Length: 370
Image 1 (cartoon, rainbow, N blue to C red):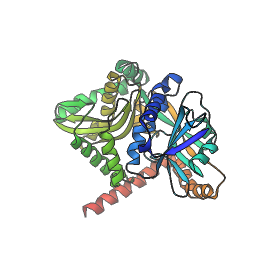
Image 2: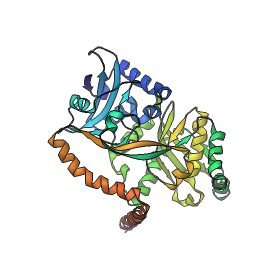
Image 3: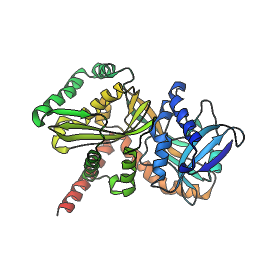
Image 4: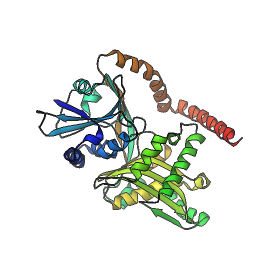
């Protein structure tokens, strides 16, 4: 295996075209997750504009001038600690490769100068990485490849009453706030700023770390909002009521799927389930655009349980070489990860932890207001 490492902006047009073609054809070979926008060259290049540690390993099965068989985007520290690109932000990670290609994970790490590579949303089918220290988690999806009516029929089959109630919320919102209008592809940057303000307030209110307090994340999202190619686009969807936005979502779209990313809504209309209402409209819009499914991302939430039609699987873990840097990184990261996953996996622990975080959020709100 021949491995060449470069910065994303140093990739030539032929490499970008080959990478995109692998993603485009992946669903035909049973690897739909490989078509995810978080594994695209556009996402890697955008992250590299804000983080200087992004690298791309170009893999060839033959000599140096043979055709590429895979592209491996990652981030690397000066000490050789590797992370999935956008770790903590990206919802799909791994090596984009041609059908049937097999690789040795430790050989890949050596070629990239890595002692360890950490991931938290590894796509299915990455067998070389899955043999390492990993734990799998469900990632719910909304199937719309057969059209909106077929999707709603699946929801009704599981819960006819619940689906009827959710669909009726749009009419109730219109009566309370004015005419409801949905824009699937909103191009107004002001709407994106509103979404980020809502999301920041939600993070603070629920005691979570505010991602948009980091300028590089805000800059990355704004750049992706303006990124449009034949195979990739940042997609902002907005639900309006009475002429003002009440819910919005920003995600990343490829030909085959929409990767859901940042949803938020105005708490003033929370009783109308605006988040679910928005996602149902997104499903209709995605079906009309020929998208196969919406990936809701790892994590069990009440709205995801209602919206999903099935689940994919993603893995968290790391692959290592025998190296002191790898041992030190694992020793530092493993306890916090194990504690978090234990709490998330057990409802008896998750609910008290969620209440504690919300109490922290209320304290933050009180402090900022005083």
